[in-house]
Image 1 (cartoon, protein in one colour):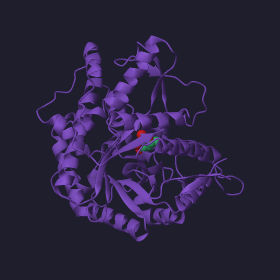
Image 2: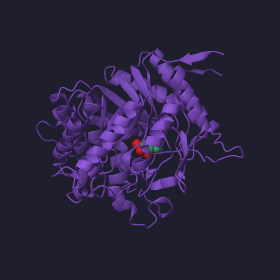
Image 3: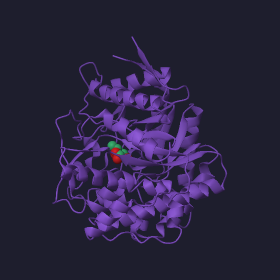
Length: 451
Ligand code: FCB
């Protein structure tokens, strides 16, 4: 059987995020986060009135999860740090117990031969900072900078790779514009302002990291979903271009020193959007050179002209492709196209896929197994797309599966299972899925069978 093999030093990882897995929300002086506040409103905004109070209890059970990672030969864990465990009030005095937890976790990874990749911000903002306006407050970039520097000092000797911010687009779209995620706002102009400050925070992080000369690497993780026009009509083509303009270019061009895309700025002005005020030095800060671009990809967007959807006037539709439990269509060419567009438009950056995966209605079968062939199929097809992109010159050097275990999928909570490892929430029992075994084999051999 032919094998698909990856470059020698390719990193095979798995990813998770603090709020989604840790639980222990009231322990060791952790401060309240916007997700605690949001999930405790209990008006139906979260699936089944659930919350992340216990989640996967990773706070206590991480040694077991790391043991399973070792069993699967997974090279690296991308995890995130809960800002409110370090600064319960978002700023001010440091909570040593928070630092101790992440040091212990990181040391345990290293003892098991697993490379740590730490994300500084994966959406769980301290509530105390939301009370000051959250990401709409310009001062946030400075508070973030202090927090980031504290973590570089605390873990810099152990962590070789850092991610500043997770998904500016999804965080600001769902949290500030569509009201689907914490903090639950519905204001497009506010979402662009929050995005501007998140990108400034990213720049602060990169700048402070560089100043410390610690020799590791730092980048950002962005969420992309390659936009295609639903039909060949001019209107749909323009709608797809606007989606690409918002989701990809608005949150990526500035990072690479290209500023905000002018066509989108004009469009937003024509729609009555208030654009973020750019202060002297902002764009330089945002474009502090980073070491890699993290790419989170799940599905493409097939766009049509939709005058009802303000201000972008473009919406997406399913086209008949197979889709996952999230109603996300499976289209690996979206990943290939995305990787090659990023390579072309941003001068061949080093790219890491920091999330990719699929949710399915997994269940334990009569043999006690989770026979999730659909997830293996998804992985297989997307990894072929990665291999092809590498063949065509994309500097892709890592792939992190989302996710290590099933976890709290934000507002969908336990209803969407993305893990390579199944979680029985009632007992906290973990079971490696068949996809986990398949992925483990890939991690061990750096290759998979072509079928
Ligand atoms: C991404 C998030 C991640 C997870 C996956 C499914 O947008 O970064 O936390 O929810 O989607």
